[in-house]
Length: 458
Image 1 (cartoon, rainbow, N blue to C red):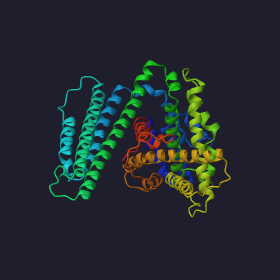
Image 2: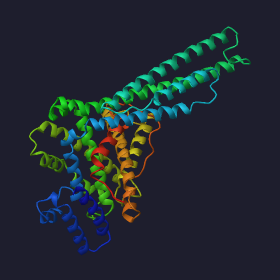
Image 3: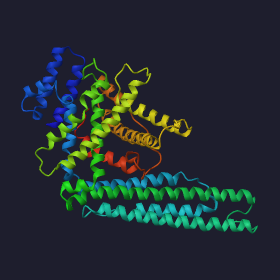
Image 4: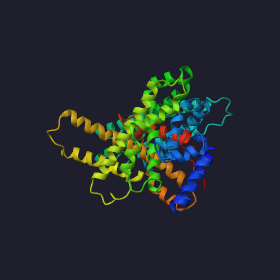
């Protein structure tokens, strides 16, 4: 029924954009009929469509996302097993890419690199076993991480020994290994550069392996710890978890809200800033959360407050960005701001701050406290920018599956595609969504909670 509601909404929304008022009313009536399970009756849907906290479909999206907090049990051992399997292949793909971009000619280090490649293949070419239990993929992942770590250690040790041996030969005026004709300075430079490439490769692997372990630990906690504690206790012991989930939920909702404005589903006499401030108020958000959870006895006030605080905090961040956007002398200021515009302007603000800081352009009269507040705000903007780009990529993928139409074109304007980061970052204070664990977390939430709510059909 939920899928029918969303499917019919997408169809009728397109009709409402290019119709007269009578046809629009008829189209909205069809939406109310498809989504009648959200209301007491169709009359309530039609009556409340004017005064809903957001418009009906945006409220629906947010409500369904918040309700998903109840369904923590839905992320079970089977999904954990799938995650471990995905991380296993991610480990192989990422290290393989780094391995094959090493230069073909590594001189005296060729033998060690070849041996490493052979051992690496052996690790990932082990015979397939029949999976007896759900924990196999995770055990296999941890075992593989250990083995890859071991061959990294071996390569580092061999590289160190060979480099020191070549260095010793040069200092003593002898011929280094595999250098029958050589210039002392040139050989020393070659040996140093090649050893550095190997060290960089292994260092990347160590960071990547540690990052995979962090992701696995987070996933394990999501499944195992909630079995040992009741849900309220789980959330209270994992405050960052609930804050991050609720941040993803509210930014997803805001993105969908801006999408609705862009396709003409709101009062066209008001701009995005006015509509945003009218709809996304602390009272409205708290009202939605409390109305959903008022029948759940095990969700105490402190858990709900954590979620509400996270949402309201992120709403204030977005509001500040939108305010700055409309205060600039921007040629696009007469148009409504899209989610893509929001991301671009946030990125521009971050860059301006960093450039000004690097060039010493900040007012020296600023107190240390204010300077720290500015730095923290910039970090928060950077963190939310990373989150928005990940969500935009995921939404872009889903919308691209739609048949070519004017509606599809409008929605793609709201959800642009951004390049993936070349380097993997696993730990970054205050920038969780800019790290690989953070990106993995967002994609998991999107796949398990958001995708089925906002599902588009070809």
